[in-house]
Length: 118
Image 1 (tube, helix red, strand yellow):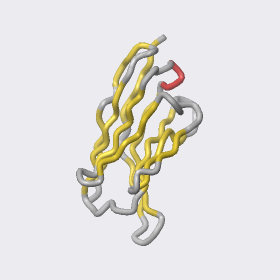
Image 2 (cartoon, rainbow, N blue to C red; image 1 turned 45 degrees about the vertical axis):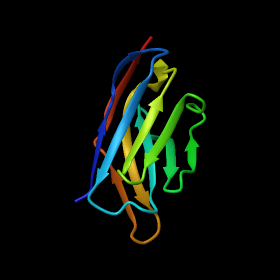
Image 3 (cartoon, one colour; image 1 turned 90 degrees about the vertical axis):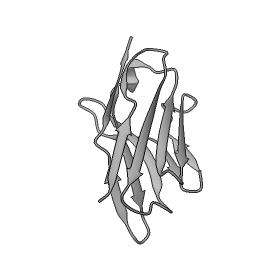
Image 4 (cartoon, rainbow, N blue to C red; image 1 turned 60 degrees about the vertical axis):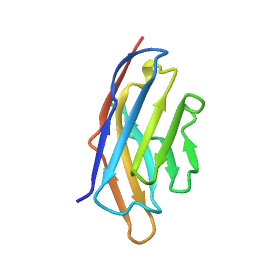
């Protein structure tokens, strides 16, 4: 059974930092894309950052230069270092792991709340 367990959310003042972590278990995650998404109240879920198993990264324009995604293929973990946080970063952040080639899968964590006060 696949499990994605997130941690590290919380309340922080604008300009502060937080690190989110996600531990994946239950299958072989080689060849997968690991990502962080977020969903603010009343808005659609959006991609924040992603990292391939080879270490290639991609970021939403709104977080480029402030957030850093990293991955440990041995421990099957993915982290999101968030610096210079802004009130508009307030959202529930979700870990996602997916593979588009066989075996195909798309797994989600339960979400962790990040609240940035002004």
